[in-house]
Amino acid sequence: MGSRSRRRIEADLRSQNGFVQSPWPGWARGVVSVALLFHIVAVLAGALGVPPSSQLERTVAGAFTPYFELADLGYSYRYYSEPPPTPVVTATLEFGAGRAEETVRLPGRFVAGPRMRHQRQLALANALFMDVQEAREKTGNSGNSRLARAYARHLCLTRPGCRSVTLHVQHHLIPDQELVLQATRSPGAPRFDLFAESLLTTPEWIGDYPCDGF
Image (tube, rainbow, N blue to C red):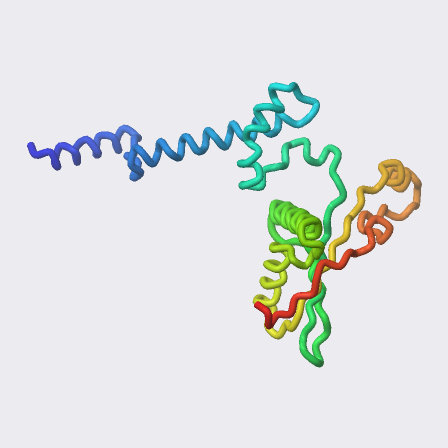
């Protein structure tokens, strides 16, 4: 019996016994297994390293800091226990004569699809705000933010006829818990408005970006 026939018979036997041979070579399966193990350990270390935690837990979590920054994994399961104010980026799109301006909010008030899409927009707005802050500290001009320019370029390319994009950022403050409780306990009181103007800070100008510059 030739080697090819023997391999075919062995493959048939494995299939009959419920074992399907993986199309991946052994080295590829090993690499993926190591990568998954590293990711799982990193996520667990990040969650356990959030205070209150021991010095050992914080030290182990600190070793994964470069990976957290690379993969944007700086959010543990405790992230929403004491959340900071939420950055909100507002883009004003200017078109030609006869067409009204358009306003785009990031994160959007109403995002279609699974809730993870809204979480992704929150992460994008936060990353953009942090990059704007860094550009302001380093160059004195928030408009030099790399992510702000990238966002403006994306809006220009996806909105036909757009001539320029103006970006502003503000913070959506966390309402006082007592005020929310009072509104829910008072009979006949209107529902507490989580998007009231009083919970939004004054918008800060980031920059103006002409679309013909992209």
